[in-house]
Image 1 (cartoon, rainbow, N blue to C red):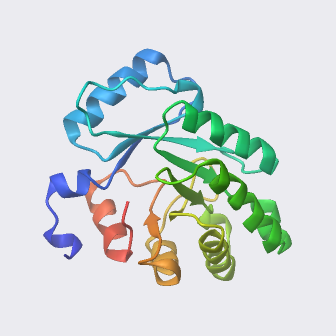
Image 2: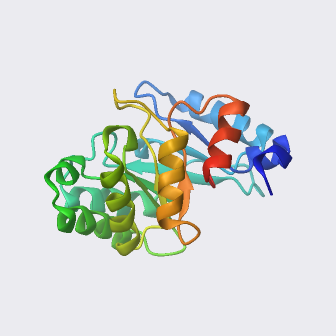
Image 3: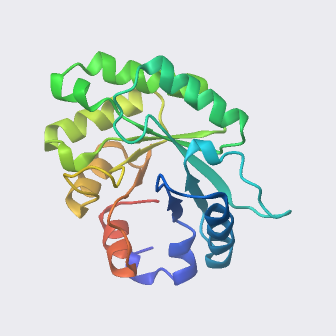
Amino acid sequence: MTSEALTTAQVAKMVDHTLLKPETTTEMIQAHVAEAIELGTFSICVSPSHLPVALPEGSDLKVATVVGFPSGAHKSAVKAAETAAAVADGADEIDMVINLGAVKDGNWELVESDIKAVRDAAPAPVLVKVIIESAALTDDEIVRACEASERAGADFVKTSTGFHPAGGASAHAVALMSSTVAPRLGVKASGAVRTGATALEMIAAGATR
């Protein structure tokens, strides 16, 4: 199905409705859950300190959280511990930030082992998404980061945290990520995706979330 043929409800069901501002309150989380259910999004994504999230009985809304966020510069053992705690608190999906310094060093062994530490702490059916911060990477680094994510057992690669000064998702990065790992892995466009037109552009480029 082409992006032009998607209905509003179908697009909504591909969305992780995200609230990661540091000043987020419990009341804001409750309102966020209600809004996600009203809009029919696939999930909410919140900071790990807001887990567990109370959902209405019978809701199929998934709960995602972030790990090593937003810098990715945490020790792998810290990311793994954060992941295990999030899974114990009911997280259905883990969005981890890659070790960007290791990417820039060309230390792909560390990049892969860092991702695998999170994967091992979040066994299936929990999904692991790897945030590669694509706007801060070269095309070659994007491809190699996606390949490392796949080798480490990730379920998705994700463009951005939305917090990096280099920027968020681009159709170019999404297309490159998709051509590298799809359909084996999902591709999530994140950061600056705030309109229906932008969402459709990302979907057309290969985004599945």
